[in-house]
Image (cartoon, rainbow, N blue to C red; front, top):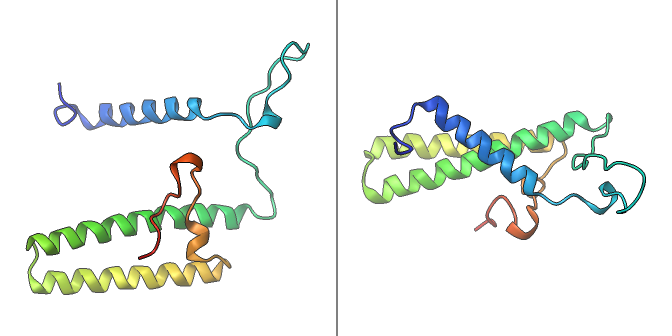
Length: 135
């Protein structure tokens, strides 16, 4: 059975399993690993640091990062459709206006929470940054 032939639920299960495997492959940071040979059992690695004072801002940053990633993906897809000639002139205008409004709303939300668009670009270590550099 190919990926397209499977019911949607099983594809989501596959994605969840792949994500779980990926998270298990992430290295723990040095302070999370106890010295070998010690009497203490290993404690689970802590990769997320939370501060009760900044939890709202951190959550907003995460949500805005995901929205910005999706906005950029939609923008690229729209440009591909325009280049392919799949859209009417009216659809192109409406799509362009919608993407510009979404971008301006993102900037407004960032300023409301004292964030910049660069703050949303997460560093993924050896993979680089989540979002491509601005053109």
